Image (cartoon, rainbow over all chains, first blue to last red; front, side, top):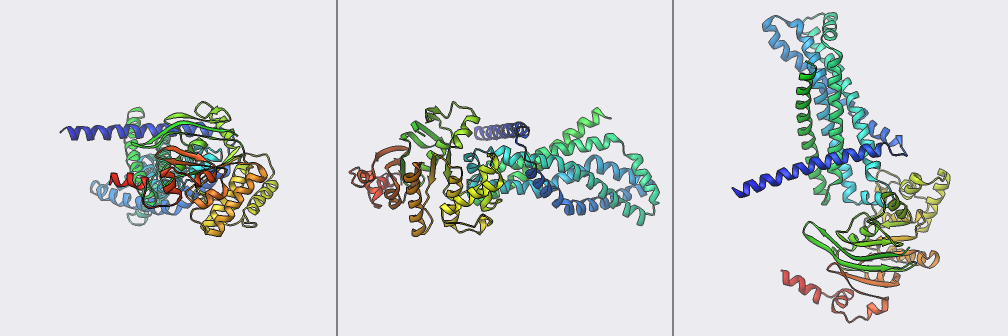
Length: 260
Length: 254
């Protein structure tokens, strides 16, 4: 019994420490973001890697999500003879919820893991120490460009994913379910309000920060060679997934009560 | 630059690595620190660079305690020093030229043409002229080590810290690295701290040799003094004997 309590206590302390370390890294990153010299090309390079190179997978996944949403909604709506509302449901679920979350999860798996693996390898091969000996702050040099790239690219990619998802829904609705094209577009715009878009984008901003911070923190804490890099990468992806879903839950609740 | 290490203690988790280490390195001196693998030699170097902070004790560069100065001042001191890491620690996303000229590209006011010239000069110093466009992944282990030395020399430092500069390279490259360290000392009066367990290299480059054992400096002296030592631990280490006080302590634990 004592062992169980001790174990639970140790885990709690570990998690509190972890959140502390994440918060500390976040504030350090914010500080170094505004300390000159600001080298744009490093951020640009990261943004290209995170944004441009993720386009194909984001397109594919969000197209499928749009199609799935349309089919699943149709299944229910046909029973109620209200197929007309499928467009509304697709637009709202994508823009408010699925677009941000799916894009966040894709980037956490594709790019957050890559960031951890890269920084982790740099850590175990002493490249991060070497940066310090060259009078360069690792947070400024490594974390800031990735932080900016994630927080900028995730909202942009989400907007794109929303659009592709709606197109996926359109394909099913117009070509399989016989809804008129103009009707689908009209119903989509009719359903969406600015607040839906804004709340979705606020979420993506938070997800971007989570992926960047977890990815970089795990990378910079890596120890123990190749095995350590593997472990850190796994922990990074799992932690990002959990934090993204938890943050999503909290923000959805907050937005539900603030903007009913 | 005068480096004074006083009573430094450092623990990693529950393992004590530095146990009251004290050492002074005078200006222009080449000090070789010898000791078994994992005895804390690299940790000591990282303390001098300010990458690691001691649990207690002080490290002072030119009389300035590293624990008491601002990070800006620490970076100013770091610009006067350079460290050559064991595995080279070259940035693999940058070319050899980008690595060697890193600090200059980041901080100096020099034009890129001047930096390129300095990079080429540093690479020629380590007999690797004309490879600035290659990526670190295209280099052999020995070349990586020499590029790392070129990166250290490119900022024209007053102090260079070498972490096992001759480990893992062929004997000829090892000798040319020794010669380079020696000539930097002779020509430029550069202060060098060399951490190694390669005794041939130690005798070749050292003004003074210090031995780190169980986190403490147990012996210090000129190369010939160390060579003719009666200290049983030092004797066993420099002669590479399997039996002796060092291995006896290990046997006791086993």
